[in-house]
Every structure is written in structure tokens, then in C-alpha cells.
Image (spheres, rainbow, N blue to C red):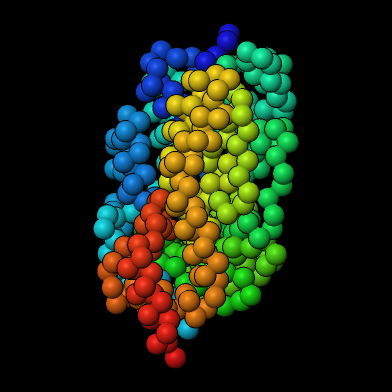
Length: 373
């Protein structure tokens, strides 16, 4: 069978792409390929911004937010003890990826997407189609198969530089944390790093530790020690600890022309300030699904759509990530966010969705920087 679109990877980016194809052109033949069987675990903080649910509702999946209660606040603390604890404009939710991703897959299948358990190994681009493993044919392919994307590798993409790659561990602690707040504790060190504690509906806590530069990565033991040093009461259960690397969006862009597109982690769509990737995954997946219907013109259309949607945001996050790596600037930003709701809102929007930095908010941070002691 010739498919209209084949999507490789059934995470948030892949399911969003599949759903967008059917939203744009009902009755399209869409196959969703994944090497795993769902539900399956995924190394992630499990925190999902409210804007993600807006994107999913636009794709015809309005009820995913009901999987977890709202978490209204965001709490940050720097190594020098500067803190902010405020309510976000809209609450986030913490949903384990085993639950969240399976719900999206079920929604896609319910709308007519064919789910197939399959690991892609080869890719051949012909003038009028793309062939996967010599047997699966489609007019366009969306590679949404994660940080270790096979599709990206088969396209000949360059490896991400270490400075644009984060490394993290995640586990689940049986202990509970404040159910009303996402907590981030920044770490001291030569590279930006932080520990997180995100409350789950069942009273457990998703905890983790990440370094935002592969050159500063360490061993599993070192990461666990750093995590426990920052969050001593939330030790994760050993069997739940998993490691992962994250290709950050400040890496060079790779979006070729033609019938093969990339979305989500495969497209290095990870926020370099926070490591958040679900908003970018769903948004870039939806853009890829629309572009995929253009066949040979899909690649150019997808690249242009990503530039329009994320270009300004990514320029801002790249600059702010460099500044936030400096302890005095981080202290100033957190202090200004504690003093001014506008700065806090700008920081939350920049880190959790596709916000930018208003000049007024940046001026308040710089003013605070000049007065820090």
C-alpha cells in the first residue's frame, strides 16, 4: 500500500504529525511506526505546559489535561540562594510519559492512523515516494524518532556539537513534594545544571538532574549524588533511574528539502534554557504533518514554517541560555522575577513554550544585575 504519510516515532511529535495530516485531509492513509509497544516509559520530567493542551485540542484531542491535576506554581532557587515562587498565568500538569504518550497514540488510532510495531533501518528516497526498509512506501516521511533519530542519521545529518547537547537522569521518588509547584534547584559548576522535582498525582515525585553541556557530563553515580545533594529528601528508586541526552535547539538547523521531514527531538527541538521539549515536539510535529501533504515540496515548506513559528523564540532562548550560564545574571534574573510578575511571566513563557523576552522585562533584569552584591 502506498501511504500518504509515514511517521517514524509515536511520541508527542509523531502523533501530532499524524493527527495534523488527518485534520488537514481526512481520509489520508497515515501509518505510525515505532520500535516500542505502548504504553512505554520515556526519560522525561513529565511536566507539560498548559499551551501544549491548546495545541492538542486544535488537533482534536481536547481531554488529555484531565489525566492529571493542575500544578499552578513554579519555584526556582539559584546556588546563591536567590528564589522566586509564583503562580504561572496558567497551570502546568505532570503526566508520566507512559500515560501521556499512550493517550496520544490511542487518539491517533481512533482517528484512523495505522499503528505498526516496526524499527526503521533503511530509507530510500525516490522521485515520487520514500521507501522504508524496502517495504513501507509513502509520499512523505516525518522523522519523529527522538534524540537518537535513525531517520536523521540516514539523511546524513551532522552530529550535534557537545555544547548543544544536554545530558540528564530521571527517576521516581516515593516521597511527595509540594503538589502545587514545579521546583527547580540550580547547581554550582562550570556548566549550567539543575535538579528538578515535579509532583505526580499519585503522591510520588518525578526527580532528575541535568547538565546543559555534554562537556560537563559525568557518571550515573555523580549525577545521583548531585541530585541528592540538591533534593536530599527525594531520593529516586534505583529501578526507575534512566539517563538520556537532549539535542538542544541552539544546535545548527538541519531541515533538508524533499519528502523527508524532522520533528521533535529528531529536529533538535529542545529548549536550551530548561530542557523542555514537549511543547516544541507537538508544535513541530503539527507543522510537519501539514507540510508532509505537499510531497516533494514538503521540506522547504516545513523549514519555512519552523522559521516563522520558532525563529524569534529560538534567537531569544539561545542568547538567554548563554547569559543564564553566568551565576550573577542568573541571580539577577531570579531576583527580578521575584520582584516583578512581568519578568516571571516572560521567563516562564520563554522556558515552557515559545515566548520571547520583552524589552521591559530584560531592562528590569539588567537593573537588578547592577545592584547585586
